[in-house]
Image (cartoon, rainbow, N blue to C red; front, side, top):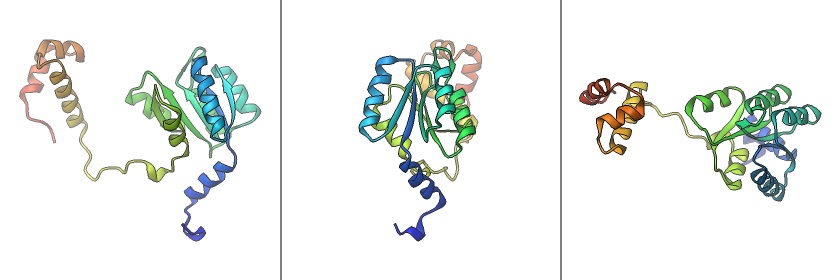
Length: 191
């Protein structure tokens, strides 16, 4: 790619690569140690911390260009670190890691400034690739995405199949009344 063809986004990624300071916040000490070593071998200057308080203090002292933050830390929520990092350095890239992933927390993490959201266990290569990815690497929005009703229906069908087509067990796992589930299953799939 020639210099004249670089987009503003590509330029910000290139400038971010010059400053390879990285904050890692995780209260799982063995994981923190392994990830710190793995990122140091990839050329990062790593500051490892084990709590929200340590993470906030570290970014206020020297704001890194990258961050890998566990969602749940012993003293609070890692999203507090992400939002503070984005306030201090808007061009920073933060990745949220969690073993308790769901769509709501992923959306919240991205709204607060996380660049990506990975479920644990994630290995160092996955994390590195997420940190270094450019927006173009992300999946494009589909032309005709499924409706929320269709997504819900597909989820119910999947759980129903996993429960061996047992209506009572499926209703229990979905925390829904059995008759309500039967009515949903009797209908055609929404568009």
